[in-house]
Length: 340
Image (cartoon, rainbow, N blue to C red; front, side, top):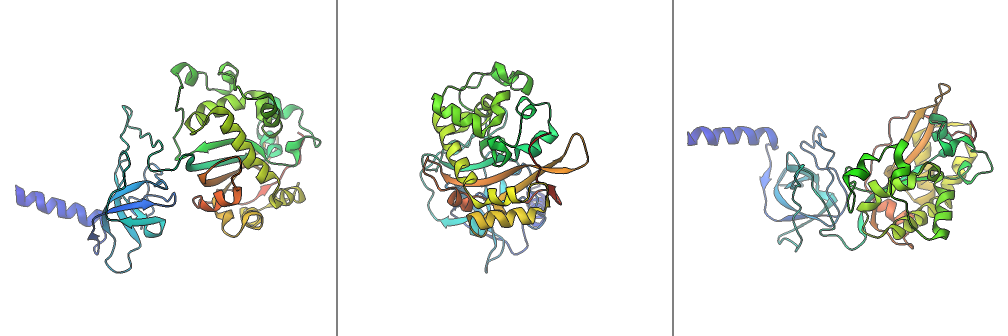
């Protein structure tokens, strides 16, 4: 029986590991939010798992002894927990750093918390809407009924939200079952009010026209409660990022191309021009067919960020530290003009 078990284990290993894989000891300190593959050859990643910058993972093996491209490591709380990560996404160390190990909750989810990260450091997605296009897809929204070319969001990006990552890190501190039950667009008005200084709220209403539909309450409940700082800091720091975005040359590209069809590659090139080569690789372009026609309109840019966010953070640096991502599934998009 023992001989059979050994043969079975060898058979499993031959399927899950490259033939030239070599066991190694030590730990991998992630420096980028990179995908953790079950099979890096097939690019399979159940759960869409990313390693977290600053976190240490126990190493299992390398894919080949000479010039390895990937480490295999243990990522607690995911299935399967042994994953392959590109060597260039971090550094190897012999001794484990002093950090807590995440454990799954009763539902099997892992609270990544702040382990191994500096205060305020994490990975994020900044969702910046092109409101004229969004309104073509949801024209009945309150904030869309009176949108005109004189409004700020007619010629600048609008704030959808700042989302702590990885995906699924939602509803954190102080969220009750009743709040989650009310987290539907029709009942966002029943969610707890966002309490921030009047000056900050006035700025938020300009950059986030969705406040007319109580979007800010939804965003705080789902994403802000997972931020490492209080409500005021979450909105103030998010608005600072949006100010950087709207002060960039990317906005000029958008305005110059209103009513035109552009490709994701053109948008990404404009991001590179605004924030430096490679920044465009951190941007996913979202689109949707308009409700009253057949045009595919730009609705949102989702921008990958990583690092310490403060009121003085440089958006370009945060973008360059973010993870690369796909451009999205839009072959081309219309940059829509304000007004339905």
